[in-house]
Image (tube, rainbow, N blue to C red):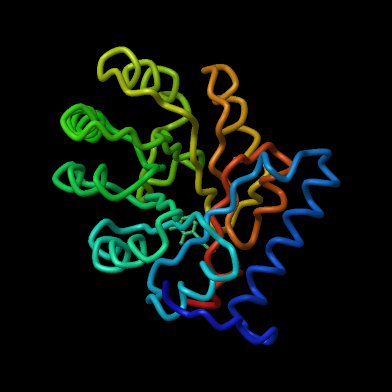
Length: 229
Ligand SMILES: *Cc1c(COP(=O)(O)O)cnc(C)c1O
């Protein structure tokens, strides 16, 4: 175990986490949802162990990274010090990184094309590890953004299941920065429902409360916990 001393109450990191926790609890109450139905993923990309350890020590157990390489450099040591910690890949995955991704991550939120399905299916089979899988939607149909177009989502989810044997557990979306997020969350929830998917990875620092109102089960919160990047 690393730091044994309790953090001073003025720690900005712990302050960020406890403020986020309060906001989640209040929003769940308003939305008549159980707090336990929303998983907080603390997005630690760009931050080092010195920033992450206090957040683990404050009780947070699920973390998100957007690059396989960066996660591999930071997390194996942290995970052996804190065996109960889970790691989610929230950023794009290249098929040549699927092996490392399946070895390191407990969930992948960015399944969005056949080559990734194929690589993941192969690694899941050979490593006997089953990360939870989310299909990423490009709800804003932004050309520069990863994800499946809404019109192609049903067919893609079906092919994940039937062609690749991948158990998809939910959908993920990242609304366009300049759009109101609510319609994107509503669309994601609708596509999930008609495909029998119960998990919704949506909501970041600026909009997680709205996402919870629209049924988010996994919120990905970085800067509100760790500070500006
Ligand atoms: C960085 C990132 C987040 C967290 O963003 P914040 O605005 O810092 O909360 C969430 N999801 C994805 C996919 C990200 O890359």
